[in-house]
Length: 349
Ligand code: PHE
Image (cartoon, rainbow, N blue to C red):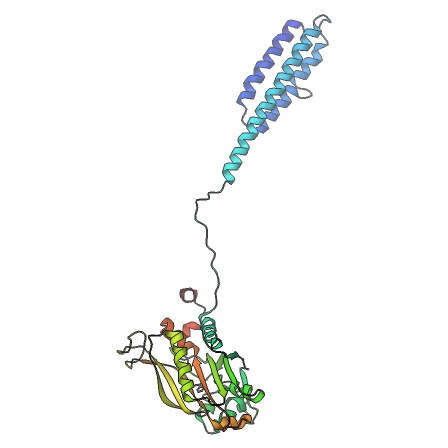
């Protein structure tokens, strides 16, 4: 190599470097160029090799220029690399950026079943009046479910057609699924002394064919009060207050004479129909009234079973049908839907 051709080649390399580095669009291509110009067998390295062939008088000047071009290429490579890096960074940022004006996705929250909510609402009303919560077993004995509740052997509720028996041996301890929550009265009175003000929610079972207003398992809230001087007036006042709390002050309440073996006198309690407001409609079967609970003054015979003196103590009891309340409050035409897991229904109430 002579000096002239050496300089020509060097300037060519310098020009090509400027052009190609300007045009390169990816870091990968940039790396290829780095190797091409500055690599161990790249064009700059080759000229350093050839430098040795030059006349010693020309070597310093050529070497100086060669170093300048090398530095120039290095700094252009670095500048381009930074440009490409920051462009990549910009792209990545815009791809990852979050549009904070987009509306958020709402999560579906679970909630308590309507039956649970109504039970809690009923409990709260009575707890507010000073009652205590006490639950009892769902598998009961004939004694607690019937006998101690003054229900005679021949009573139709005891028949195989009405009650689910677990062991039908007819013995005193016959196991059955309780047909109402009233056995809790006996269990509590047996183990405690008055004054008693108790609410007891839970499941009850009857051999009913399911229809719009019957399911073989349903819920009741039992309530009872035992003390000295408890009167029918107390029962009426308590249940009127309860009905107004749960259905609204504008609803009327009436007591209709009825019969239960364990209360005397007994009554069924109706509230005025909230749909037709008393004028008569399909829900209330044109009567203007809807039955929601059974109640009465605890029969002195029941006190006999638990060792209370009926001359000293008196009491009242009532049993509220929870599905009934749900159907009336939420206008549910068929209570079987309360046991089905239909999401559309469950989310609507
Ligand atoms: N246990 C009765 C029923 O299931 C309701 C009731 C409870 C009636 C307490 C009077 C007193 O129908």
